Length: 354
Ligand SMILES: Cc1cc2nc3c(=O)[nH]c(=O)nc-3n(C[C@H](O)[C@H](O)[C@H](O)COP(=O)(O)O)c2cc1C
Image 1 (cartoon, rainbow, N blue to C red):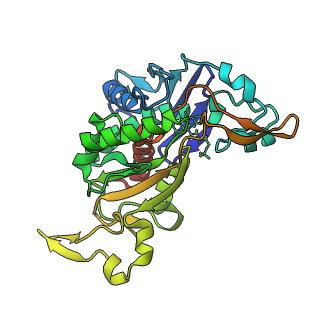
Image 2 (image 1 turned 135 degrees about the vertical axis):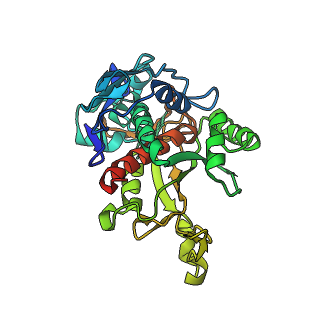
């Protein structure tokens, strides 16, 4: 199993074409009420949307096998499974020995001679379904602490949202299939994805995540710093290639006088005049919203021909990946970024005892 967290721990398991994928969520406080409706809502946001996601449709019903009594956590591990019903392995027969460029196939095939690439195996985005279910429970745990987590699509391909965005905007993105903040951007991003898909290609993009309600001082230091633990979890999401907090890489070009978030007093509390640090200094929250952006690469499986090798004959060849794939990962990854962030914050909140 693949494990995230120290106190609130999520253990993930399954493969794309197994009977099911799932997770075990450990140490959710005994007696905490868990809303099945909220889990369902989060699951529907991760589902592929018409024309811009994989044609593989799953009902994504989350079956809770144990850990709940009368709608509340009973203190034992919460075991959840989600059935893989719409499985089609036929398109993988031709490429069992030909690693897809950009996918996990090459290292996995070399490392494990019996590696099964069907549906991406254990590397599949399908495993993000139980992450989103667990993330929903983590969000429900954070809610009484007034900690909110929401993300949105900042860019896809050449289409970029240039506006400054806040929690309200991020929540509004839930009304749009691409998870863009406005209907106009939703249209343009949809166009960008469809255009790549028509070319037998794919596009990447950036997800931005905002967290409000973290008290000043929330988080650890050094290797437990908030940015370190969030980054570790975010890099566990397939297809993530970069993360930046606040001003991120742009800060490297500034002077300290520009990048420092200067302080002022607002109704007896200390506030910062800007948020270049993305809400984190010294590994802890400075009371400003936590803001970070995650770069997703274009989906590796594309039908456009690309060069690869046949590992059985050790000859060069070309590959055109058939089957059902997301032409862009970003719209579905938004809820996954939210989920891992909520899991990390719920985990840290236990040691913070807030
Ligand atoms: C929500 C989600 C959906 C994904 N869908 C696909 C897909 O349809 N086809 C594909 O080739 N990769 C897809 N991926 C990406 C691969 O799983 C990933 O690129 C691959 O495992 C290699 O890992 P890496 O990109 O982290 O190196 C998806 C990832 C996520 C998070």
